[in-house]
Length: 395
Image (cartoon, rainbow, N blue to C red; front, side, top):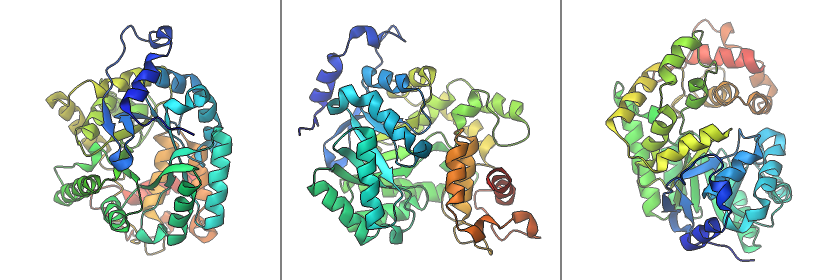
């Protein structure tokens, strides 16, 4: 099999697409920005397509017609159905696009099974990037799983090995640099991590930014996720999220240009090769494309300052500081993330599935049974309120 890895190859493929499809939704072809994904040599548009919340394949097809080249899915998205939809949408242009998928597997056998299922559901004989998904401690990236990735590479089933990490990102990046066996890291990185009112939070952002830059210098491709800080664009479009007064939130979070500003904040870090953004409809796609063509401005910063203030008490920055802090053993970062899946991304089924994967004794714990909470968030998130909400929502 042959793999198109050059920018010229991608552009040539895009140029061959029907002109009518490029103008179906906009009169002007958007400007595309490309960066090289670490040492892989892959040329990716700085805006990549996160398929987790997408149910309309025409949005994916439209993005590929425009020239977006990187599409990200996972074995676990939409109960496994997301891969099948993505594969069907991209079947006719498989050699012109980069497809990544992920596995939550903990054992060799499970990982091998997940990979075979992903290939079958996507209708392809190889993945461009295959991630060990949601690894937040070095112990979760086992020698056994790294060996599965090495073997899959040798067999031609994957081109590049990846790891995704939701929290403890700086420490995970340092560990993966030391191991030297990971080609691409998918990491949480967004504007909400910058909180000028919190010295500790600013220190964490500086540490993460430094780790990203160090990893990129080591040749690791850097893909940013959670760029919208937990569903900013959904609130901006009128969905209820984070509290009892959605109208008040919408006045802040619905400011014109908020999603684009959030993406531009990420992309101004030149060590980030691309940002994966979930998009559910054509309007979101057309709006988000602007992030590749427009500079980050003072107005963008003003918008994001208002957003930070609005979501500060409720949005988990995924710094990992609360990991292990609950006296009763609740996995606080995970529960906060599940709540965001359900409300921020509108993916209740995914949130519920993740919740049910927790041990039974953990699922039975209720925060209202405690007279006081042992978890103190350094970023000011109302952890007890948020966890109680997650428990009521998902239990």
